[in-house]
Image 1 (tube, helix red, strand yellow):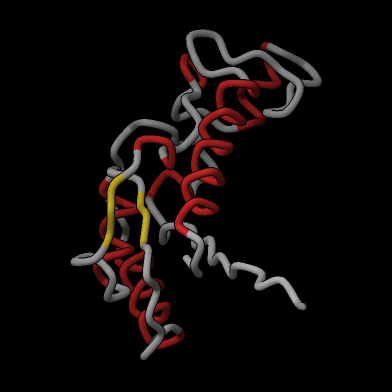
Image 2: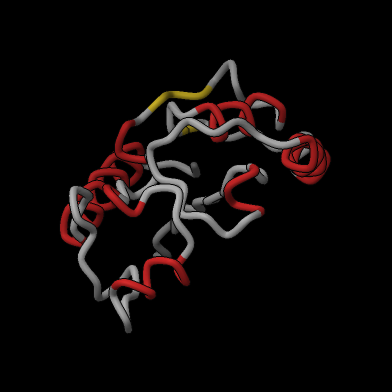
Length: 139
């Protein structure tokens, strides 16, 4: 007997001014740009007619607005576990500017003064995986 595999769609929010500029955008609640809203409209077309029994979104405006424009805002549940990495003192900075003071820095191996560790982000991701697995249906 075959086991049913859950299908999970992971969709990133549309463009913001900071993402367009390559700035690390963690917890700062930056809105979508006009291009980001157009990306969300294109997503709506791509997902037209697709039903998801569970829709989760970060409570940050860029994610919840992308979700709403794409047509899933009314069914979405907010989860702080889906918020972006907390970059601490590196919030709003580019990787290049961070490397000026911390040569060789990467998000995966470097420290984020005042921010989250990789282990903390991993725990949040694991919480979402557990929630989705427990639902037992496509998400």
